[in-house]
Length: 449
Ligand SMILES: Cc1ncc(COP(=O)(O)O)c(C=O)c1O
Image (cartoon, rainbow, N blue to C red):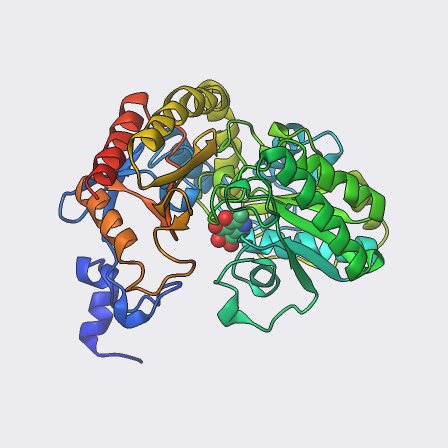
């Protein structure tokens, strides 16, 4: 036996101290420097800590909680499924799994009709890459700088931000390219149209120089999430689709963060009129109540595995509890008109509020977004656009953003802060009053800097 009797006794009780620190090894952290907030309850767009402080959740946790905390219908779906069949391995047919796959296929673009379920977003991208490689017989994958695709071996290699650096070397067959980002153009572009044309010309040149016949797939977050809520110019994704068709490359849309209503459409690609070959999803599919992700697969790629074994699987692929919440998510989207309200709140409330904020507050360099997915980019100087903190800041350099984050929390708003930006991604069920209250907190805090 390990541990003293005292330890054994403690392990059977959830004491507040034990849940806060003790034996949990924390993600993305130096273990001696973590001081996690102890969350004890949540409801709708808010959650509470153990000191009774309530936070308006402007990050929807990690942009997964699209239907908010403790949605009664999602909880009921878990209970009902748990009482019926809590788990069953993936080789069996199961009602919740089949029904969710059907609903997803129906919502996805017309030629994407099958779903491979995973446990989350990173493994969805791992499998999408594996499918693309086996389908094309090629190895190389192209992905963007300023992207995040997950923390498993290939997914972190695809990632185009500092989270990749300490994980190198891993999958050596990944090449990064610059996507469109008009505010900080890599192409000296002065407008969206120019940025679009030049980003596509850069991508094509890179495809040719890398050897088009070596490239299995291009993976792109439809709207770049943690790296800046970068909404692509209108023609960019159709241009990528055309390049993929021209060179026989699989187009993978990573919609782990942007999918399931975040941008006001079920899949973000609908905003841009493109049909990828593979779409990866997770997070909003069931608000993360039970871990779930997956790959939606085109008929052409499914055909590759008609007589050839697909060499991949997961013990919990299509877990019934997770899928039951996914099925109920579709019903709630319909009954609560989630897509229409997300579009309305983005277009009529967040957009105009942030535009006004940008005129009022010198610190704001740019605001941008779609649906309930926005960024406020903070700068030292509006003319030079020098970011308020440098790229990948040290903790000393990051002091201004840490100060802003602390002030937002003290005012009861739980923010998502990335580099020199405040991201706005609340649950899609947030009320208009709560949304305006949260935006007002941001305005007050920024004005006070
Ligand atoms: C665009 C994108 N892809 C993939 C992932 C990885 O998902 P997970 O953390 O479920 O592995 C994330 C997570 O934030 C993401 O934002």
